[in-house]
Structure formats: structure tokens, C-alpha cells
Figure 1 (cartoon, rainbow, N blue to C red):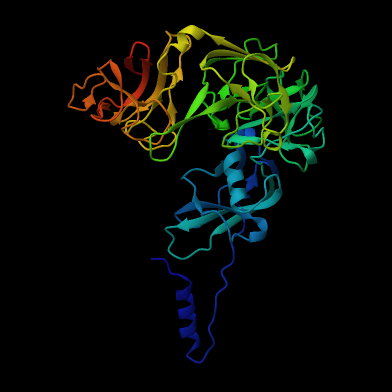
Figure 2 (cartoon, one colour; figure 1 turned 30 degrees about the horizontal axis):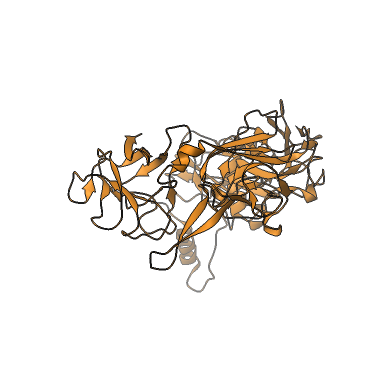
Length: 505
């Protein structure tokens, strides 16, 4: 075994006699023969290179003072004097280097409480310990001090096309979609340019124009070249710092009780832009002329007017503080061509919506240059004859369960298929389901679309049953999904022919 320091103390004490004071031996620290070096004395971490090597440490061999040596690595904020050091890392035999990625270093700085974008001094240490020595030997140590600037996962927007101009202190913070990678912002832009500083303190580092206006470059020095905005409008800006890409586009959405999105802005229906050179957006689908409200625990049904309006972006959650296209007057009929009024903040504006009086398949066209909305109702005669114009889905086999109020899953009307066709695409798990005809609290006495026959038992039908019936009350027929059948499905049903088809994806 090693003879440790206490052995020397005991021996010295006995030699000096019982009345003599303790004699302590001072073991000198071995000279530094390793000469630890760092790849850069000033490291700037780059969020666009998270998995790339940011810093590497190398050292020479320590003086051999035993049969073998083991190297260990430590690192800490310089002023903390290794009180908050990372755990000692054992270096593999034969290796005399260690490296860290941009993300690893940034995560360490965050752990040490370094503010995003700040510079700090770190100290690294290599320890060479002798092994299999007959006596204790003090480890050889080599240290190096270096500076690191952390990156921030925040990203900001400024430039001549924004309200902030080129003043980084007024830069607009972008919404972080994927941490440290994807960011979004929606708002008014003018003709001009945009660029993306990493903080509101300094202009650099920043992202700006790369090879073209769809690509980004990372700027650490010099003047940032902005991405060009051709003309004024309301834009959605998406930045992917990993791919160094940027997409700048105008967006228009549809929301309201008159469409399948309901009053959930996070589920707003996207309108298409057929020609990216023109500021015209189109949506085609079912608009509903009235919505159902069940009153209390009885069978009284009230019908309320339905309405729609047009958000200019889709928020990630239930949030109404967003820009919007609104009707010139509340209750403007959703028919023909009407004016559209831009409001910067829906929550602060008078709530003016278009009223949908007639259920049907509509083509809705928004012209941002003309500031108009055009409603065209299609196949009016066929749709007026449909027995049911809205269909929901409920049950233990669905993600919404049995008792959601209103029901979470509404089938989409397929305007391109035969009249009366509704579609669901999504997961089904083991359990039962059926199709309510209004979004009320669950009760078996409500009218449902149910299987026309039951081939499993008195109340359960397999997914091979393709006939439907409208039935309220008992017996409570439902389709059943077995454990083996669970998976993703496309369900197509037609309320005109009262048929249904199940296709496992």
C-alpha cells in the first residue's frame, strides 16, 4: 500500500520524543511539465454551430514518477477557484487532449450563471496522478486561463423595414419555436431590410443576408447586410439558424364559430397563396350558418349566429393580441365582395366580424392590395338538401374521449368529393366511438350517426360495418376498435348516402 503523509508524521513524532512538537513534512509541488494549452484564448460561442468543436485543450506528458500516470481534467469560472468546477473527467489512456462543443460550453456557462451574451474568464486544469507508486506523490498540475463569450438562445429582429429601425436597443424579440434553432415573428414590415442581432445590447454578433434573400450568414464583425423586403405588408418571418435559412411571407388565416377552427386562434385555418407574386389568399371549405348550444340538462337547443374574421398569423396558444382583418361593420354579411379593415391589435379594437347566414361550401378570397374579402357559396342547391351539415367525433377510441364539451374533434367537409362527404384523419386507440351531430355535453339521448348494424354484439360494430343510421337513445350502438386495429386512420363518411369507410394508414 501507499505510505501516506500520516506515516511520515507518525515516524517523525516518535523520533523526536514524546515531548517534542509534531514535525510536518512539506512535499513540494512537482514542476509543470505538461504546459496545458487552449486552442483560443478568446472563444466566441456560435449558436449556429452547436455541435461543432468550440475549444480544445492539449498538454505534454507529465514527468513519470511512478509506474503509470492518470490524467484528469477540471474547469470552472476563474474567480470561483474550482468551488463550482465540473466533475473531474478521467482522460483515456494514451490521450492528452479534450474538447468541448459550442453547446456544451454554453450549457456550462448557463450552469455557472453567466448571462447570455456575456464574457467571462474560465480556468482549466489538468491533473496528472501517479499510480502504482510505493509512496505518495503529489500530483502534477497545469492550468490555463481563457475567456469565453456565451451565446443566447434569444434572437431579435431589426432593420429599416421594422418599427425598430437599426436601433438594436429597440429590436423586436422573435418567438423561439425550437430552442436555439427556429424562430418566428409576425408583424408589419415596410420596404427596406431586416437583420437579426443576438441581443439588444450590441449589434454583433448577428445574422444577416447570405448568398441570397432566402439564406443567412453569421456576422461577427463588419457591417451586417440585411435581408431585403420588397414592399409594405404584414409578414411572417421564420428563421432557422441551424440551416441558415429564412422565409419571409405574408399569411392570412380564418377563425370563428362559422368555420371548423371555432374561436381558437391557435387552430385558425390557413389560407393559400396561389401566386407568391400576388397578395391574394384563397380558402375553400365549409362555412356554417348557425351553431348549436345546448341549454342546461334538458333538450332545449338554441341556435346562435355564426361569424368569422381573419387573423394575420396563427399564435401558438389562445392569444387574441394579434393583428387582424375585420369587417367594416359588425354583422357584415359573408356574401359577395366586402371591404376588409386592418387592425393592429385585435384585443384592443372594436370586434367587427362577418356573419355567416347560410351553411355551404365557400371559396373565400382575401386581396390584401385591394383590402377586400370575397365570399362565393358553391353548390347551394345540393348542400341545402343535406340532412346534416356538421359532424363531430367522440368516444374512448378518440383523443377527445367521451365527455369533452364542446367535443374536440370535428370532421372536415371535403368540398372536392361528393356532396355530404366529411373526413377525419388521425389516431384511433382501443375503444368505442360514434359521431354526434352537435357539439353538446355527451348524452346518449342526443342524435348521433351510429352503425346501421352491430356484428360484434348487441351494441358494437366492427370497422367492416359501412352503413350508418341517425339514432338517439338506446340501444347505444357504437363502432369498436380492437387493440390489434389501433393506429392512424382516414375515415370518410357521407351523410347523403349514409355510408362510412375506414382506411388504416
